[in-house]
Length: 294
Image 1 (cartoon, rainbow, N blue to C red):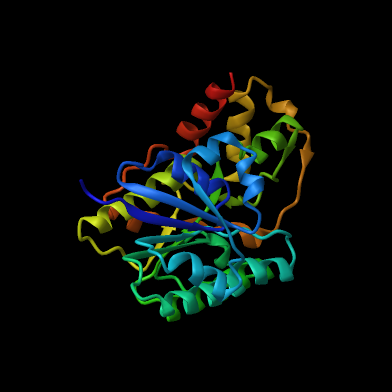
Image 2: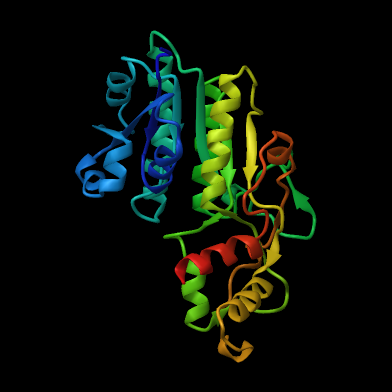
């Protein structure tokens, strides 16, 4: 019988728990590290899929202690506990430093380390598509912390694979639907492009990387995790209004947002890896989400 590989998910929150529920547990044993596992254990669906362990991901000793007994794959999916410069510093920069140092001390390094980041590192705006070759230019403390963490983890762990996810939506991630229900929308001009990815494709792509690497394939060091259709936010909201059964007059409150957030992201490298998106654009993804809601 083939021995199971150990997959460690650090900062194991919603994304990590969803991945644990979708991975082949005949092939992998999934371990999740959190400061307070009792929070996760309160949810039965997560407790069934993850072997929870207590640990602080900003502390080298905690990570080293847990991973020393074996870690074939390490997936880092951190989120800030507060949306402040300090919160982002702790969630990304401090954890990157700790993880890099802890892995360098392990008797046997993981075969694959994946670091989940965000397309917030791109502060640019404009009509030209941005890809993995585009130098990031953060426009706020969030993007600056995310980029600093990427640079730390890339220097500390040769071969690390970084995935920059765009705006994640799906079951339990329905902020945009709530805004539309409240009648709020972005201005129609100038177009403010939005880049999105369904949570099922986030999980699907991460599992794709894990499985292909197991077969001997070497992933690129960086991927943009986005669907295939950047769309102006106003256009997306107008489509949602009709799909949700409202009239166009329902969108009555214009909410100003920063034009610097308007950008188009290319997912060609993701597609070139062989991954096929389940939800290649917002219409397919949000139609499935609304249908599931009934």
